[in-house]
Amino acid sequence: MNDFQTETPKLSADEKLNLLVKFGARISSELRLDKLLDIIAQQITLMLDVVRCTIYLKDSDRKELWSKIAQGHGLEHTEIRLPLDGNDVVPIVARTGQTINLPNAYEDERFSMAVDMVTDFRTQTMLAVPLKNNSGKVLGVFQVANKSDGTPFDKKDEGILLLLATLAASSIEIAKLYQDVHIAQLETIYRLAVTAEYRDQQDTRAHLKNISIISYLLALALGLSKKQAELIKNASPLHDIGKVALADNILLKPGRLTPEEFEIMKSHTIYGGRILEGAHSKVLQVAHKMSLYHHEKWNGTGYPKGLKAEEIPLEARIVTVADVFDALCVARVYKKAWKTDDAYLYILGESGKAFDPRIVAAFNRIYSSVRKLYAKNQASQADALSEEAAVQASRISSLRDE
Image (spheres, rainbow, N blue to C red):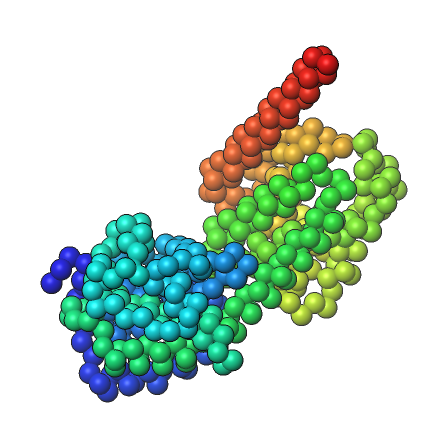
């Protein structure tokens, strides 16, 4: 057996038929595109006894075919992109909707060695079929390479792969639609958050990004599932959505607020809660808890309701630590930026007072990652300032020359 081949358990005809029956049920219940493609590739690899299965999907906007699913040789997370107008096998299949079967890949002019060179793989035989929806539109390409027994692909293999592509097409189309809707929802959430933060932040996007990352890391450090951590990450930018209801003379006041003004400032939590109240989306439900309770304190001295300890929703307790840390580290109209390590020490010092001790302990565990994040941000800002200074110097020099 050649070094590019791997031992694959042989399946009987009954076992293959059983896999085929289960195939439709498994893929119809999965809405996450990446997971769906992974399931499909695994099943194809088993049923056709191949070393590698790669699923390419069309990206019409970029005029490319892309894939992150390449079963075999540890390439499951390797992204491959091919131009849609290319002259090798996969683009040809995508454009023509025809099956291509190469019994000896390196001797066929339609085969490109480019992907093999990038992935350190040698293709011997290849079979590629179009992935079409019910209306006949090509959504992508299913490609398999190198049968485990070293023989070329035959008509039976072509039929099986075309059948699997037909079964998978509608599930992939639904998953893509679900993904597009999910992305649109997150983009809407982000833009709403930018609207709320824009008025009193010098760098709104950086602020929201930092809070999202810290909240996500804290959730994972607390032992929450990746799914729960993703919800918290995606909801966290909306924690201050209630600020849209505050007047500029309160929000942007450079000096200390009067007691009356501070009471008005505190009302942004109530407004945020009202804005997000009754949401059906899980992300917005989490954001509702954050917006309403992110100024509550562990010792009960916070606002708006003076909740204490576990009475405060966990999501709010997490985003509170992330928000306070980032707020300390960035300059605002009424304060200068703190050094990262000083802000870190402040968080530790408020354990059991403002913050949940368990979350502070988690923050302590992730701080090395947080510190790197802020160091990178500061380096990027310094580069931007240097570039702007160079531009200004060039302009001044040009004016002098005139």
